[in-house]
Structure formats: structure tokens, C-alpha cells
Length: 74
Image (tube, rainbow, N blue to C red; front, top):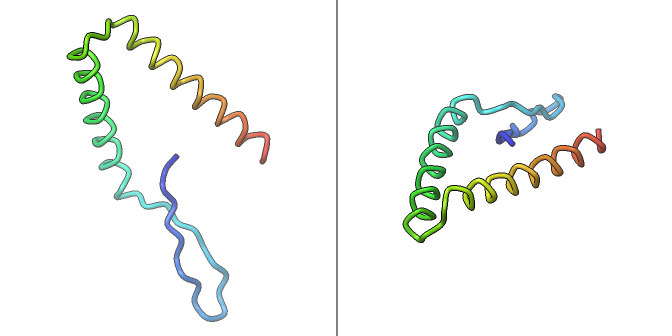
């Protein structure tokens, strides 16, 4: 989920939320680096590609469940 920065309200104005667009490309790059590092670490520790796919599938399942819960709250 992208980070949402909250600005302090000014006197007489409602509080607003703004996305931090400059941070998104850095997060995407960080996620690619993290993914490669995790993959490399798992392979070096003897995990087979099928086991890594099972891990990725479980992560996707958890995220999907989380998204479903969030959509029910809306």
C-alpha cells in the first residue's frame, strides 16, 4: 500500500491527505532489490525454485485476503 502523507491543517482549512509521488519510484526500486536479495538468499540456503514459488504464492494469498478485507470496509 502506498504511503500517504498527511499535511498539517492550516487555520480554517480542513485536513487534507496527499500521496507522496516522489517516494513511489524509490519504493518500487527498493522492492525489486529486496526481491532479488530474498531470492538469492533462499537459493543459497538450498531452497528449490518450486519452494520459492510456494512462498510467493502464499504471500500473494495473504495480500489478496488483506485486499478483500479492505474492500469490505469501504
